[in-house]
Length: 205
Image: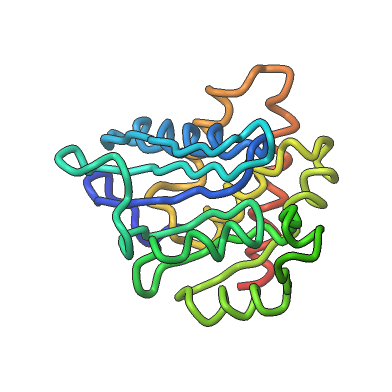
């Protein structure tokens, strides 16, 4: 359970990935959970050619009414990354000692496929491990597939982030937000995806 449960706490979560991975929905579910518990929350997105697999970054700011909608550098309490390289790219916004939830999926850049740039998974992983305060790697796509649909990877990662104990609200609240904000026909799928992500991290702790 989170040790941050306080509806008045200021908390910033950065969600990074590429187009089509469900990052925007994940940010909205987090904001919905914050609102359910009585906090102020807002989201903002920076989207680069998302329909062509470009990077998508969502900023979720909780109880920061008088601040910019964009999380400043070295200020994010948590990063939830849907892809390995996007995790590394986002690290300048993570505060010292901040937490990272990283989906281990890799999407090789076109430049690397063409041989014009290097894409070393080991180097990227080491960089993340050496830079972030706490890192949890998770094969979100395999767990989402186990739940019934790879598109539920966003909810798998929310389950993982909640289990890490760094969310500013309880498991019950984020699950309520999921139930209230996904179509009824997908609720069981998303509840299972959340549970699988949550249990995966619990077993690591």
